[in-house]
Image (cartoon, rainbow, N blue to C red; front, side, top):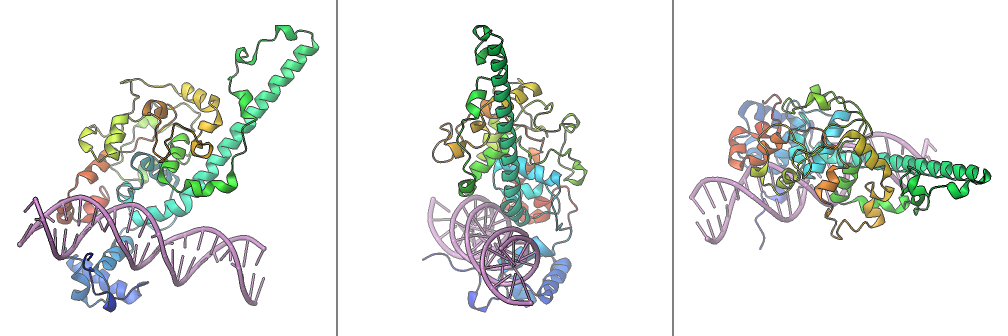
Length: 352
DNA sequence: AATAATTTCAACCGCTGCCAG
DNA sequence: CCTGGCAGCGGTTGAAATTAT
């Protein structure tokens, strides 16, 4: 049983492409196009390659306007924000980054971006931990001074000290199991949570979106946003829209180009100060490491059980243009074939 | 300089969804 | 409606390159 192989495996060359093979494939496609049939193409041009292999070679390497090399911070941020929204749908993410291929982005994510994020997360957690310890020490000092002054009976309890009631807990948290955490980051859900709690973007860099897909609509008022703890734009994505994206139910998405962001209460927004307050007063176990500490708000199958009201209050998503995702998700295969993959994959870039 | 360990990334594999017959 | 063939996609692999010892 099983389906027939797409080509005669015995007579097909595998492994790295030679410059001659590249030249043959490139010159043929540039002159004649793919002819809409990848399977037949290699035989037509005398290449001992599988059609799928030809397609991949063209898409990921030979095609014009492919961008190789380092990813910019803006690209990092786009990847991160889309990863939160739609997960590992690399082809859709690639559509937002002209010149980048889905394979490239996938590799970049798996080999580098994930590690960068972990490093960043560790730094932030450590910083908050240090801050908490410092606060606690300050409190102890105050208390000692007041005791020495014989005024200890006047001392309000820590809850009335204008301090977070959580601070005393912070210093006694168990150490984060760094050495063992790597395998637990393997699932997409964990990384999405991490990203959400990092503010939905990798870098604090002020993005210059001029290098990105022109379809990417950026609300100018958002462009001045800096770090997570700085003043934030109105939050965040409407839960129904993300659910729609996650379930491919595009009809539920808004028609406007912006990711309109609001909480479950329509139109309500959170001031940046409130976000900052939340980020720095909640216990660190809620800082994207729930899966390390076994937060019960996340179900055992790794699915996010935190509702979007809660989540949105912790997150900031850069205003990535989900309408382009919508376009991509809407494209039926036949249309893709007629228009050509360029039209789908690199909307806004120079279609060849 | 030699070897081992780690990282990167091109390419492959197999599944899914769409379409034509 | 069913089936076969195809393109497209995401996960995985493994060779090459790089870095550490």
